[in-house]
Amino acid sequence: MNTKPVIIAVAITGSVPRKKDNPTLPVLPAEQIESTHAAYEAGATLVHIHVRNDDETPSSDPDRFAAVQAGVRKHCPGMIVQFSTGGRGRDPSARGLSLVHRPDMASLSTGSVNFPTIVYENHATLVTDLATRMKDFEIAPEIEIFDLSHIHGAKRLIDAGLMSAHPHVQFVMGVQNAMPADQHLLDILLKEMQRVIPGATWTAAGIGRHQSEVMGWALARGADAVRTGLEDNIRISKDRLANGNAELVSLAVEMIHQQGRRPAKPQEARHLLKLRAA
Ligand code: ZN
Image (cartoon, rainbow, N blue to C red):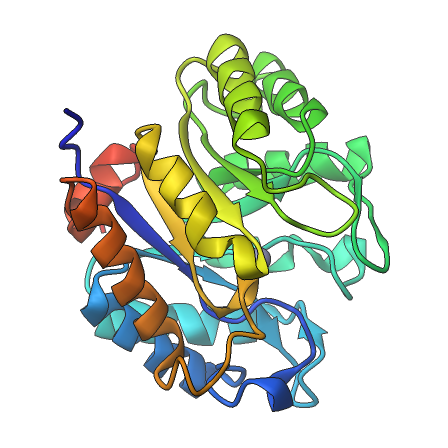
């Protein structure tokens, strides 16, 4: 039986411009720090961060990222800070600006894909640029897999010396027009990842109503981490979820215990992902 501790990643905000649908969604840096702290107290050890402008549109402002990181480092000792370099609503040339602040990790998409209303464009040149900046700043990437070819995109970066041979990989399932949430498909992706990047650690994210079922599939397959948070599940009813991100983390803790495992502590999480000490 697998008794390895499980990292709980919480994606607190995302980039969907819909705060009115969910008043618990943290948008301003002070709200984001408070929400992260509550999620940390509930058992989360990794926070995935997007920032917003004052009008709630997605922002690439490095100062905003720095403000949230400073608050998390102060209030959540050891928690892994991961900045998003994702593209929705952001100028491609600005997506890597926040990396100068050297978070522990940053998300990295290694290919393009259709999203609900846009093409999520990740030109090979942009992917190489972002990977190079992460290497220069000693930031560990989390590879976002929206399509099977993205596994091979990650392998090309490893072969080019731009990334370690043991990246952290996240399979994203249930995005409309991209990969469906399907157990059989997860098995295919996992098998291909283990063949092509045998040193990788992994997790899977299910979007919207798929959040908890994908988490269950990932835990059943021995995932190193699970992912939850309002970014992936912004429409969840506020009647069901008065405390937003922290409550989603508590649900993840329950599922982990049902599998006979336990949530990782911050230093364990860093060790599992081969990150520097806090
Ligand atoms: Zn994100």
